[in-house]
Length: 83
Ligand SMILES: [Zn+2]
Image (cartoon, rainbow, N blue to C red; front, side, top):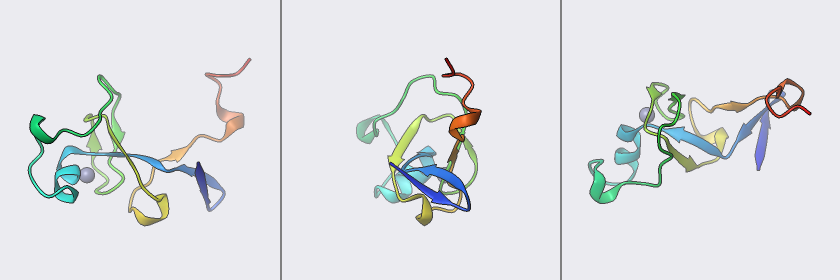
């Protein structure tokens, strides 16, 4: 599911850094309350604070409600999955 903003598509799955995750989940970030994460993920920009993160945490959020949403590449630019 995506939302179009200014001609670009934005996913409802947005990267989030550990700090912002902790801020929004009432406490410190740690293994005892770790969110679902993707291991060894490439750097992403946190959708909430704009800083780079390697946490591999992705949250479901309306991209219109965050400061730094990550846009999805346009389908015609998706060369990786091209036939
Ligand atoms: Zn953040």
